[in-house]
Length: 470
Image (tube, rainbow, N blue to C red; front, top):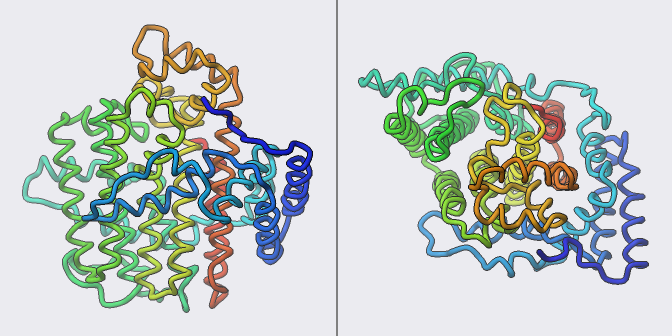
């Protein structure tokens, strides 16, 4: 494995990192106005740093290479070597910021907490999810009503994870409605806090209803992907209960996922906005691409951090990025704000998955809602394992044979626990959460107090993603 940090002059590097840490340390307890002023300083200090971090560079450039997956395109993945090299000053700055986070584990985490109105140890000032809970509940109830068919067995299967108490965290729909309000020129009316009675195929007549449709479509796509993933992975549990495939069998579970995607497609067509349709269709394409990347990885790719991050973007971050951008597009916002919304979703998605990777090693089955060490037992090497392999070369052959031999899972667990793999994964997650904060700070000024509150809610979500235990 290549060395993680490709260092230049050590004395100069230490001085540059010290300047970065000085700026970062000043973020603790900072107000949102202070953070806005400090972010450019971080970028300027980072740009002066000539060293870089390979994984940060890969994730920074992947949002560009990922666009080769635009629906109907003939583009393909860029070579790993090309993705590993920062192509622009902005990417170099991103990479340097990640290196600073690695040198100071608490730095990025504290920055995110300060921006979100929290202390590094917790203590949120407000519940971000409560800001949109009433509206999210309306979206969820509309979903339940719209998942109907004349075939009872299919309807029961399709609604399995949309029943009351089984709908999960609803992180995606909450994020999207927070983003809609954060950019909106005025708060939603009381009318928008009721259940939309229009059929899925009917074009919504106002902006907020169209943005709510994106929240519905995103939840449909997400749950459909879970149903398909559980079949592919032969999973027996999901969200603390039996997975659908364990209840009704693989064939019905796959068809239920297809049914949800069909319903999502009807709602998507009703928006009558070509860019929003393209963005959400691109997410579907990425989900398939991510699964193929995972299933067809050869021995070298299975042990590659670059390959892992590309797969993670496709399977998790793309849907968040494209749906956030679609909400901004439907709101008629500027190109810069649409890009910022996309960047926010992308970085939250990557942070979310990295934390999920950590939890697979640190949380109990009851906390996770699925068995612990599920990825290892499925033959997958996630970020903590790939980092651990840099310190324990004997882990590499286990990764390449996908932990198939007896004792491989236990041996891999021991090496991960004896390494800095979990800590480094946490640092990379904190880096992406901090980048999500920076994306929000880069949006145009909020038009109302309501918008400012919901923008603060977006910042709090980044901390919630880092702090989550289930």
